[in-house]
Image: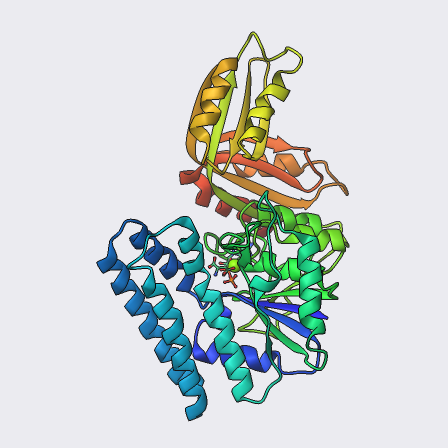
Length: 439
Ligand code: ADP
Ligand code: ASP
Ligand code: MG
């Protein structure tokens, strides 16, 4: 079994949907996981925002604009009267559903239900197209098997049992189409795996079905050695270990959802990153193998907040750190970087939902300073082979950038640096020149 996940751009137009149909046109047994067509989830977020604020006029306007795009897609996608009709009915029913919320009460539950429409539409359109072409296709609803537990974590046992049942129900088929991103929570309500979550869906489905490989098909030829949105001359990497890819994903390489590598690593299922627009390009293979290439890639994660707790009296006392960490644990807020000195401890977080509460509690232990608009720059590689000199190379490249925090030695795979977000682009560019271009 293979899992092939196609992102928003890969299914972003009628022509792209046709290209994906061509790519999956073989006898190999596979689960095809689709994102919403590009732009759709952003529009649905916007619509939900208007509904939340009871701005029904703007909501209606945005709904009608999005609906119009989908009728165009239907016109370009299908050629037979039968499927043109089916396509139109599909769009009508989904958009009538979205419109129904312009009259009702709007809660968080309804927001999630609206956000789910993008993946429900893209998969139904793909399934209809494959059916019109007489290509094998079974539509498997992700809401029948993708589920999170009471902590919001994937319920792997439930996912495994239920996806296997869905596949076993269709023993003669080889193309199973399902939605990325969407799931049910522990109450059985519609929920999602957060923005960019289709990669995570693909990984969980790969694990749930004991797949041979998880393929992430996107709009670029694999994981690059730096962020192509900010740096020119970046290059694709042919191989990465699970740990290296996980660090890059966690620290901002948008090509992979931050949590998507972990399940594949645990189950030891290779993850292959491929370019839908250029399928012949090699892409990146992420696996348990590691090669000794030294510094491999750089990523950056924005929206970081630093919290410094200064306490000359308490810091050296036993149990101080435990008390500090317990506060973050209570508020389910994970810490990315930590540094300590004799009089202070600094940590960074990216989830600021409970920042006020956390700061209030930390004040019991000293004075607290909060700093926002920071970015973590993460340099990833395999630093065991010849560890001498890596840190020096990184720091000398950044001689003109003010570095707020440094984390080195936490793993063999990463050096992290905290900078002001306004310096991020320059930091990425100069690191690229010094680490990859002048060697
Ligand atoms: P999809 O819609 O297919 O999930 P995404 O937009 O989520 O695609 O991810 C692909 C994008 O990730 C690329 O177009 C690229 O701009 C961005 N990206 C950021 N960092 C990297 C990196 N290190 N390597 C490759 N792509 C990256
Ligand atoms: N459609 C969702 C999003 O835009 C999920 C994904 O694309 O992975 O965030
Ligand atoms: Mg993505």
